[in-house]
Amino acid sequence: MKGFTRWADMRGPIIERIGEEEFEAGKEELQARARGHRLAEIRRRQGMTQAQLAELMGVTKSRVSQIERGQASTHEVLARYVAALGGQLHLVADFGEEQLKVG
Image 1 (cartoon, rainbow, N blue to C red):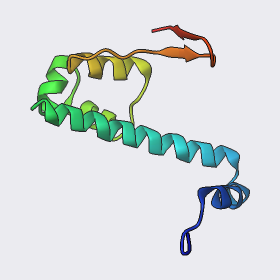
Image 2 (image 1 turned 180 degrees about the vertical axis):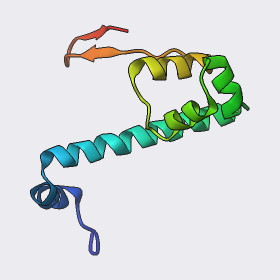
Image 3 (image 1 turned 60 degrees about the vertical axis):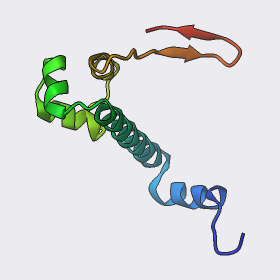
């Protein structure tokens, strides 16, 4: 397509400019923010406020806000958030042809 740059053509120069470590850190931050945004969408679809979810989790509303901004995303924190919404968080080790549920 004309007028568009392929990601494959951009990735190399970006990594050369900022370095692999900073690139990966930026990618992880974006993924955490996207995950938090999606969790907030699920909470809203369930008709729950941040304050209500915080009460169920036993944390402050500010903590729920941090989770939904991707600033708090350890396995334990995410598991508590998901459980408060009635879900389950699964941790799976993926070895290609073999998977192992580890949490």
